[in-house]
Image 1 (cartoon, helix red, strand yellow):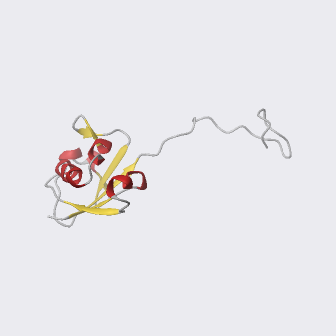
Image 2 (cartoon, one colour; image 1 turned 90 degrees about the vertical axis):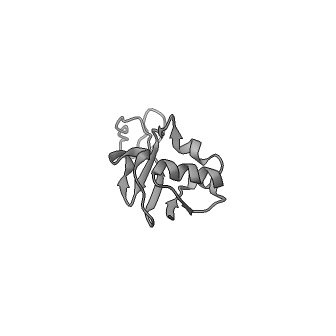
Image 3 (cartoon, one colour; image 1 turned 120 degrees about the horizontal axis):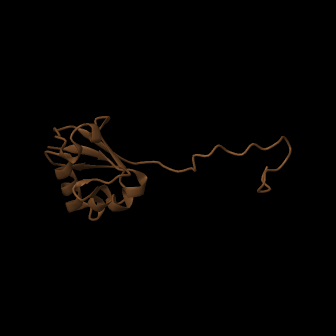
Length: 109
């Protein structure tokens, strides 16, 4: 059973730069184990303690597996799995307003 796995840029060092690889498995967890057998180190970046890492999103045919059965989500031949790192950042505070032509407290325009 062939599953296409789309790999984010940050994890392509494990796949020799490939954007997509093929894998096999009846579940997402088995797919990750199969990927690990050919792309050593990738599974540790995806799974911790038998669950998806907090900042890793995995989509099965455009559905977030966290809302399905997590790494126990069943796979079928021809499925597409997309791995995306979660994006976070910013302080949550509103940016400081800068008067027209003026500078803020940091001296920036």
